[in-house]
Amino acid sequence: MKIISADWLVICDENNSIIQNGAVVFTDKIQEVDTLNNIEKKYPNIEIEKLAKNSVLMPGLINSHIHLEFSGNTTTLKYGNFYSWLNSVIKHREDLISKANTKLILSKLSKMKRTGTTTIGAISSYSFDLDACVKSPLNKVFFCEVIGTKGDMIDTLFADFKDRLNIAKKYKSANFIPAIAIHSPYSVHPFLVRETLKLAREENLPVTSHFLESREEFEWLHKDEGAFVEFFKNFLGQEQSVTKPMEFLNLFSNIKNLSFTHCVEASSDDFEKIKSLGASVNHCVTSNRLLNNTKLDLEKLKDIPFTIGTDGLSSNNSLSMFDELRNVLMTHYDKNILEFSNVLLKAATINGSRALGLNKGSLAEGLDADIIALTLPDEIEEKEDLAMQIILHTKFVDKTIIGGEFV
Ligand code: MCF
Ligand code: FE
Image (cartoon, rainbow, N blue to C red):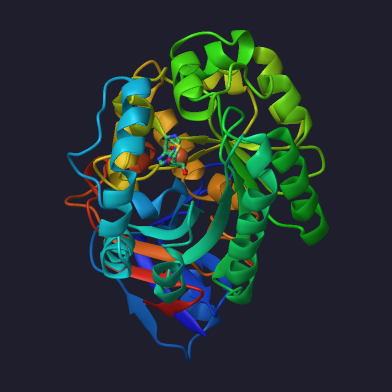
């Protein structure tokens, strides 16, 4: 049993609870959260690690959507237009992927840890990131991706996907959970979607998919029009989209831990459906901005929970969740900044946990002890400013606890 205390505890619960001068008692799970006074009385024989002035304890951040295999990109890929970006990915994919070896990916994961992330939803296209993920102390939900629309390739693609998933399953542990990513409605044949989802149901695996990320995707899926016409004709000899958005969503019934990434072009009907599926929406605001996609209208989500993802370095200049949170805060300037900061800290913790099917994301008894400690540069006068000031000022954390261990 260990105890740690700080000036401020940010609980990340429904009531945006904050405890001033609080302490957390934990083993691999959180045992108790209370004021330091109460904890000292209750556990007189346990030494308490008391953090310095202006310290904050909060749940570790959960980056629900990231592509580590694209970590080699900095200035190579073309931003400013989704279609140009897509073509640049096709052109430079081999180079970028070969740059992102285990050493590079491990260094990115280590920096992510120092910037507050304790859990990731890693989208793996080729399993070239498997080794690094297994070695890292972070919690990983490792989403093996299925992609491909070509009819005569489907058996091969499915077999390759199953091989990757089976290898990932061998590494299953408390901090490594194998899962399934369907790339998107435009890039995966409905047969592959159906078969992979069957597997997900049988084995109770978390599932995620990109969904309606760009206007180009919207036009192609709804009308077989737009920039994708040329793309599919040239690369795949395909003249029509393989599915419609609603047809695609209809395939996802009875998946327990389900999330859709982006959804910036989703209609109210699509969101109704996403809600009835019990799914979450992964919001990747920087990625959407860089690829010139629409800004997600959070009002349209109503009560669908949303999470925060950086996406990969293929569409971001940083994998830090605090950098991403600052971007989300600045982008949605129509929201009240104090209230929205609380919403965002929950999006980056408890909502991420729900989307990935985990038991963490809040400082609450019984949840996994994944905790970060950070220090604000100066005092907070009013409690209601705390969430916003944490987002504005945190670059690195002082301590990281994952599963009860300091890592
Ligand atoms: O999320 C971003 C933008 N949207 C779609 N895909 C990717 C992103 N970053 C990397 N990708 C990957 C995707 O997983 O790109 C590959 C897929 O394997 C080629 S298709 C764009
Ligand atoms: Fe993505």
